[in-house]
Length: 357
Image 1 (tube, rainbow, N blue to C red):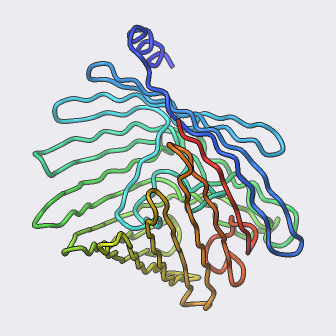
Image 2: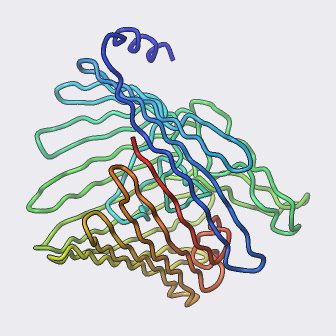
């Protein structure tokens, strides 16, 4: 906070860039019992640069049976000739795959929107550049932030279990390092390592009943990406070594192709080993039409359970920075069968009006 105040005081004479969006939406459940879920969201971003330094503050608010506002991101940047430093509440993005990134383990998943932005957390991040195509990154997270604070009781419906808290000590902090190489004979690739905690708790049954705790883990990751003509290819894998448990790995391979008329087709395969292994195929298509409109179609199919999800969506540009989005989410069975328990309803339709500024 002192750093923010100091930078703000030094920059009072200079303007602060203000941007964001305001949206109002409605989700309608298509199952028994039918439900209506209206809501409004506010995103406000404050950005300012002063010489070799900059700061960003992001605020999010929503209204749904009550108004809630929270600090989303707040960080300071410092830019030098060969390195950059970022301190504060932030998001980091590792990996090359589409939405599902096994090596992206720094920020916890937002359980209310598992395919959306991850939760921001307090961290210190450094990027050091060696030449024009090599970057070394290091991230330190002093206080562990889990994906959720409570989990459903495995034996008693309606009750929850509170996992054992990870104490905010130096030995419990998390560390990640990554080496990225860009444009090497047409390939981009990265190697990464993480030492920290699993975002989701593990349940064990003891004499007093089920108990939940977070496990320490290590991750060794690798991701690659390249293009061949109008086609793009990527692959990403991570090998996990949880403490006092069997190791497992996650793998994603995929590609996309863009046509001259703007149509883009995407295909991806995801595999997770170990108990309850997962094998999913993800397909997507995006097509622009009119002047500023677009249509999207996403689908996921489980090779294990033969269940699927399909999600068509259309975006209409109504005016400058104003758009209307309408879509449907349809699960053949439960979202649990595809590893997305936070989706709630199996079948729903939604519409959202968004105004940017």
